[in-house]
Image 1 (tube, helix red, strand yellow):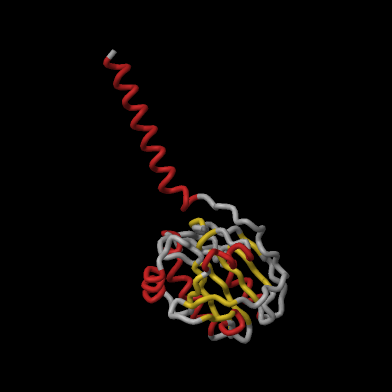
Image 2 (cartoon, helix red, strand yellow; image 1 turned 135 degrees about the vertical axis):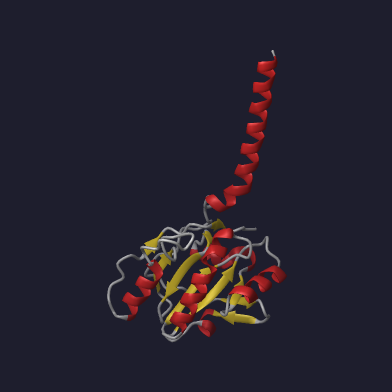
Length: 205
Protein backbone atom coordinates (compact mmCIF):
# COMPACT_ATOMS: atom_id res chain seq x y z
CA UNK A 1 0.00 0.00 0.00
CA UNK A 2 2.82 2.36 0.93
CA UNK A 3 4.55 1.50 -2.36
CA UNK A 4 1.44 2.38 -4.34
CA UNK A 5 1.06 5.67 -2.45
CA UNK A 6 4.67 6.55 -3.14
CA UNK A 7 4.29 5.81 -6.85
CA UNK A 8 1.12 7.89 -7.05
CA UNK A 9 2.80 10.82 -5.31
CA UNK A 10 5.88 10.55 -7.54
CA UNK A 11 3.72 10.44 -10.66
CA UNK A 12 1.81 13.54 -9.56
CA UNK A 13 5.01 15.47 -8.81
CA UNK A 14 6.48 14.49 -12.18
CA UNK A 15 3.33 15.60 -14.02
CA UNK A 16 3.31 18.97 -12.25
CA UNK A 17 7.02 19.51 -12.97
CA UNK A 18 6.57 18.61 -16.63
CA UNK A 19 3.62 21.02 -16.94
CA UNK A 20 5.55 23.89 -15.35
CA UNK A 21 8.65 23.29 -17.48
CA UNK A 22 6.65 23.09 -20.70
CA UNK A 23 4.79 26.33 -20.00
CA UNK A 24 7.97 28.15 -19.00
CA UNK A 25 10.22 27.03 -21.81
CA UNK A 26 7.80 26.59 -24.71
CA UNK A 27 7.92 30.28 -25.78
CA UNK A 28 11.68 29.87 -26.23
CA UNK A 29 11.67 26.48 -27.95
CA UNK A 30 8.76 26.62 -30.34
CA UNK A 31 7.87 29.06 -33.08
CA UNK A 32 4.40 30.52 -32.91
CA UNK A 33 3.08 30.75 -36.47
CA UNK A 34 2.55 34.28 -37.74
CA UNK A 35 -0.80 35.31 -39.25
CA UNK A 36 0.86 35.63 -42.66
CA UNK A 37 3.37 33.52 -44.52
CA UNK A 38 6.95 34.76 -44.63
CA UNK A 39 7.53 37.64 -47.06
CA UNK A 40 8.98 36.14 -50.24
CA UNK A 41 12.63 36.71 -51.12
CA UNK A 42 12.73 38.89 -54.23
CA UNK A 43 9.71 40.93 -53.18
CA UNK A 44 9.92 44.65 -52.44
CA UNK A 45 9.22 45.85 -48.92
CA UNK A 46 7.10 48.99 -49.01
CA UNK A 47 8.36 51.96 -47.04
CA UNK A 48 6.96 51.90 -43.50
CA UNK A 49 6.94 54.26 -40.52
CA UNK A 50 7.19 53.28 -36.85
CA UNK A 51 7.90 55.13 -33.61
CA UNK A 52 11.54 55.08 -32.56
CA UNK A 53 12.23 54.37 -28.86
CA UNK A 54 13.62 57.88 -28.33
CA UNK A 55 10.43 59.38 -29.78
CA UNK A 56 9.20 60.45 -33.19
CA UNK A 57 8.41 58.43 -36.28
CA UNK A 58 11.14 56.99 -38.48
CA UNK A 59 10.69 55.32 -41.84
CA UNK A 60 12.59 52.55 -43.56
CA UNK A 61 13.80 55.02 -46.18
CA UNK A 62 14.95 57.42 -43.44
CA UNK A 63 17.10 54.80 -41.76
CA UNK A 64 18.44 52.54 -44.50
CA UNK A 65 21.94 52.98 -45.90
CA UNK A 66 22.88 53.69 -49.50
CA UNK A 67 23.30 49.96 -50.08
CA UNK A 68 20.35 48.71 -48.11
CA UNK A 69 19.18 47.72 -44.64
CA UNK A 70 19.14 44.80 -42.24
CA UNK A 71 15.89 44.56 -40.31
CA UNK A 72 16.37 42.52 -37.16
CA UNK A 73 13.50 41.61 -34.83
CA UNK A 74 14.77 41.85 -31.26
CA UNK A 75 13.52 41.35 -27.72
CA UNK A 76 14.56 42.61 -24.30
CA UNK A 77 13.61 39.37 -22.55
CA UNK A 78 14.54 36.59 -24.98
CA UNK A 79 17.57 34.55 -23.79
CA UNK A 80 18.44 33.65 -27.39
CA UNK A 81 18.59 37.33 -28.38
CA UNK A 82 20.91 37.88 -25.42
CA UNK A 83 23.24 35.23 -26.83
CA UNK A 84 23.21 37.02 -30.20
CA UNK A 85 23.51 40.64 -29.00
CA UNK A 86 27.28 40.83 -29.39
CA UNK A 87 27.15 39.36 -32.89
CA UNK A 88 24.31 41.70 -33.87
CA UNK A 89 26.35 44.70 -32.72
CA UNK A 90 29.40 43.45 -34.59
CA UNK A 91 27.70 43.07 -37.95
CA UNK A 92 25.87 46.37 -37.45
CA UNK A 93 29.23 48.14 -37.13
CA UNK A 94 30.83 46.15 -39.96
CA UNK A 95 28.11 46.69 -42.53
CA UNK A 96 27.41 50.32 -41.66
CA UNK A 97 30.84 50.96 -43.19
CA UNK A 98 29.58 49.32 -46.38
CA UNK A 99 26.41 51.39 -46.59
CA UNK A 100 24.02 48.89 -45.01
CA UNK A 101 22.28 50.06 -41.84
CA UNK A 102 20.73 47.86 -39.17
CA UNK A 103 17.21 48.68 -37.98
CA UNK A 104 15.98 46.95 -34.83
CA UNK A 105 12.28 46.14 -34.50
CA UNK A 106 10.58 45.20 -31.23
CA UNK A 107 7.11 43.70 -31.75
CA UNK A 108 6.59 42.19 -28.29
CA UNK A 109 3.50 43.65 -26.62
CA UNK A 110 4.73 42.18 -23.30
CA UNK A 111 7.74 44.51 -23.10
CA UNK A 112 7.41 48.05 -21.78
CA UNK A 113 9.00 51.01 -23.56
CA UNK A 114 11.30 51.54 -20.57
CA UNK A 115 12.49 47.94 -20.73
CA UNK A 116 13.09 48.11 -24.48
CA UNK A 117 14.95 51.41 -24.06
CA UNK A 118 17.27 50.13 -21.33
CA UNK A 119 18.02 46.95 -23.28
CA UNK A 120 18.79 48.88 -26.46
CA UNK A 121 20.97 51.41 -24.62
CA UNK A 122 23.01 48.59 -23.12
CA UNK A 123 23.54 46.58 -26.29
CA UNK A 124 22.84 48.50 -29.53
CA UNK A 125 24.13 51.54 -31.37
CA UNK A 126 21.47 51.37 -34.06
CA UNK A 127 17.85 52.59 -33.97
CA UNK A 128 15.14 50.37 -32.48
CA UNK A 129 11.53 50.92 -33.53
CA UNK A 130 8.38 49.83 -31.73
CA UNK A 131 6.07 47.72 -33.86
CA UNK A 132 2.85 48.36 -31.94
CA UNK A 133 0.25 45.72 -32.64
CA UNK A 134 2.92 43.67 -34.46
CA UNK A 135 1.80 45.19 -37.78
CA UNK A 136 5.23 44.95 -39.45
CA UNK A 137 5.91 41.49 -37.99
CA UNK A 138 2.64 40.28 -39.48
CA UNK A 139 3.36 41.89 -42.83
CA UNK A 140 6.79 40.28 -43.13
CA UNK A 141 5.72 37.03 -41.51
CA UNK A 142 8.29 37.33 -38.73
CA UNK A 143 7.89 34.66 -36.05
CA UNK A 144 10.80 34.85 -33.65
CA UNK A 145 13.59 36.91 -32.17
CA UNK A 146 16.19 37.24 -33.52
CA UNK A 147 15.01 37.08 -37.14
CA UNK A 148 16.66 38.84 -40.08
CA UNK A 149 15.36 40.52 -43.24
CA UNK A 150 18.16 41.84 -45.46
CA UNK A 151 17.05 44.39 -48.08
CA UNK A 152 19.11 45.83 -50.92
CA UNK A 153 19.22 49.50 -51.89
CA UNK A 154 15.85 49.19 -53.65
CA UNK A 155 14.20 47.59 -50.59
CA UNK A 156 14.09 44.19 -52.30
CA UNK A 157 14.36 41.28 -49.87
CA UNK A 158 17.60 39.43 -50.58
CA UNK A 159 17.87 37.17 -47.52
CA UNK A 160 15.55 36.11 -44.70
CA UNK A 161 16.07 34.01 -41.60
CA UNK A 162 18.83 33.13 -39.16
CA UNK A 163 22.01 35.12 -38.62
CA UNK A 164 24.21 32.02 -38.53
CA UNK A 165 24.03 28.38 -37.51
CA UNK A 166 25.06 28.73 -33.86
CA UNK A 167 22.61 29.79 -31.18
CA UNK A 168 25.31 30.23 -28.54
CA UNK A 169 28.01 31.70 -30.79
CA UNK A 170 30.38 28.76 -30.50
CA UNK A 171 31.36 26.57 -33.45
CA UNK A 172 29.87 28.82 -36.14
CA UNK A 173 30.31 27.06 -39.46
CA UNK A 174 27.80 28.98 -41.59
CA UNK A 175 27.42 32.77 -41.58
CA UNK A 176 24.19 33.00 -43.54
CA UNK A 177 23.71 36.76 -43.27
CA UNK A 178 27.32 37.77 -43.88
CA UNK A 179 27.59 35.41 -46.85
CA UNK A 180 24.39 36.79 -48.38
CA UNK A 181 25.53 40.39 -47.99
CA UNK A 182 29.04 39.79 -49.29
CA UNK A 183 27.68 37.97 -52.34
CA UNK A 184 25.09 40.64 -53.08
CA UNK A 185 27.57 43.50 -52.73
CA UNK A 186 29.93 41.66 -55.08
CA UNK A 187 27.21 41.21 -57.67
CA UNK A 188 27.19 37.44 -57.21
CA UNK A 189 24.14 35.21 -56.74
CA UNK A 190 23.20 34.58 -53.11
CA UNK A 191 23.62 30.84 -52.60
CA UNK A 192 21.41 30.54 -49.52
CA UNK A 193 18.50 32.97 -49.52
CA UNK A 194 16.65 31.61 -46.49
CA UNK A 195 17.54 29.78 -43.29
CA UNK A 196 15.12 28.92 -40.52
CA UNK A 197 15.42 31.39 -37.65
CA UNK A 198 15.38 29.77 -34.20
CA UNK A 199 14.45 31.96 -31.26
CA UNK A 200 11.76 33.13 -28.89
CA UNK A 201 8.28 33.58 -30.30
CA UNK A 202 7.17 37.14 -30.94
CA UNK A 203 4.61 37.97 -28.26
CA UNK A 204 1.72 39.13 -30.40
CA UNK A 205 -1.35 41.03 -29.22
